[in-house]
Length: 292
Image 1 (cartoon, one colour):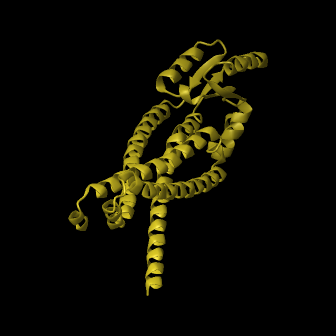
Image 2: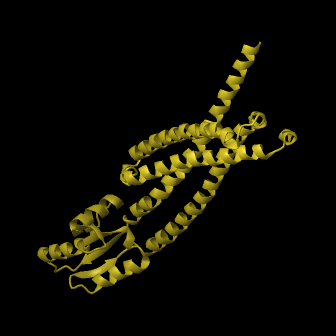
Image 3: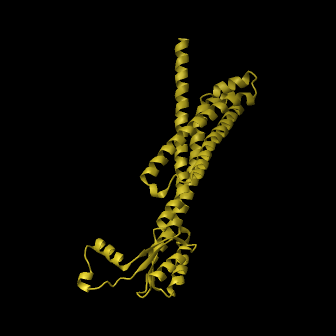
């Protein structure tokens, strides 16, 4: 009979430990996702910003040598991510593919101009800085016209700011929720041992002696939960990088390693503090208060 009861108690204990580990790993995994979102928000935003280009339409009498010199000078500018020369013949072909008709058949000539597309670095894709670049080339002797999508730049700038602020606020709230959830799981685990804690105290054990095994057990659970969360995050990162290679999600491995370290440390620290304060609470209660 005693053996059966002991086995039952061990099964309950294992079940309790497993539930705590699952709770810790899930909330740390969610916290890790938010951390990765923060790390990659700028990267994704920069990717979309750098798709916006400034087009310099060149005058018809500009020689190939002048075009090459202009392109080289643009490449040397701090705001330039890359440039591409598009001849008017190429532009006509692009128009034909996009619209399915050849306008030269009824015009008899090609009215398009040679152009240089400038892909601007993300830090310079703001209304003010794009306007500065526009003014820089408006009076250039080889440039007939400067064109870019101003409404798109305005929209990108406003939305990136709004999204970044939202993610920061949401992440702060989520971090608080994570702390509360892990704390609740640990407190429930300690609550089930409140009579054991009080019994040990009544036979003369010091508070430090009583707390120590509870704290180390919870820290071990936090370590296991943290490891499981990091494994899940690694699998998710590899999958996302495979699906969206252009974003370079795992390129900055130092930042990812730092995030993983913080997530793991949070799991350990929260379990340590939660167990400390939970055991302290029951140590300070009177015996009759343990039933409430």
